[in-house]
Image (cartoon, rainbow, N blue to C red; front, side, top):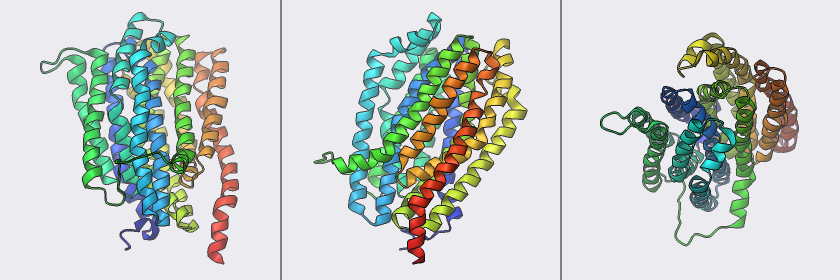
Length: 453
């Protein structure tokens, strides 16, 4: 019985570490293949890196929909399991798979009809636009793998199973790493595919991971059961998934909107400035991915113990998550400060890109530590079913502060644009602390009083 309810009985730091480490490791590998993708593409020239950077917001949007829906799914399943309601957990998991397929159909339509219009709206160089269209078409039309894969990973994580999601993610990452140079540069008899080769390598890894995730769900998952025969949507289940999931989708999509806005601001200076932003987003994933991996350990613990009415374990989970994330980000900040020239050199930078990029990376890295705490507090809100709070914080940080501030700074000088990142995170953290006190008094303190009584 204790093994089945480890989220209720195992010491919280040990529990979070045991659940988060596999996810953190797999997400580090994911960050590695994301950056290797760009490093290989950069060898084709600055225009190629710019094309991938301009296309990246659509990939971010894909992941926003996939992961956001998965976050709602994870939160709902873990809460229902915490309440002992297996039937509702099974129903949520079944909805998650169907919603993943529906999400894919939206991006299939985009990939078939809209890549050219999208790239022409941002790229001033015809070669850059053409490469971007090639990349976007492939990653959207063949994106079914990533949507279903992510849904299954979140189902497994909600049950406390972190090993198989790690295996699934690693499979996709390693496949991408192996195929990238082969398809981009035409090794071992493969034709030279350039930027399109990078896109094909990406979706090939996703599709292989998709097949493995289906096998794991069918043969290894015992805590929940997915049944699609006779499936029909239930309004209450959809509401419960998207009460947390929709704010998460919007919150992460805001990041896509933010990068599109920043691309539009920076392209007015040069392609080198856009490439610097692209390099930053790839490099910073080595800091943020492990933190997001830690959230995969924190959220099920928060959700389960909120459903079970155990406030002391919720507090321990949030505290452990904040401390761990802060340490990771502090190390990342030190690396960016000391090693920006080396980090940028991976992207085959021009002299203009070096002059812009070295100070830019150091400035933007100042946002890491306040972001660490903000991410964990957002995970807490999502875990207790208050995803809208995370949405409000994300909107304030990325729409209300970063983009307007970057636009104002761009009217003065390019060097000021990068300061929008740390300023936005500092303001958001202050607001977050105030919001946390209010939420705690309304949602967690009553549980503490009930426990004392």
